[in-house]
Image (cartoon, rainbow, N blue to C red; front, top):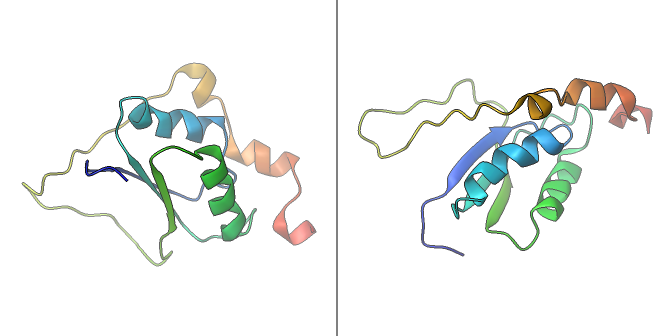
Length: 112
């Protein structure tokens, strides 16, 4: 594990798809270690499966995947706390990836 500060990504990741991978790789490709927080929604995939898929996708890389409680209503920070707030704008072909379309096309948890 690196001693470097990590980039944090928070989401449902339902399911992890190429757009998510592109987003996380923006930091990994710069050598920045990453933490991926998974909101436990179980709306499409069970949370454990989301975690497994993310860990497999980034196997061997400096990525920690963990489950974040889903009762968080906002993410807040104060001035001077030392965090960067970064927005990544994907290229059109990545922005066109739709988690909703993937979920609608595939089998849902309730259909298993």
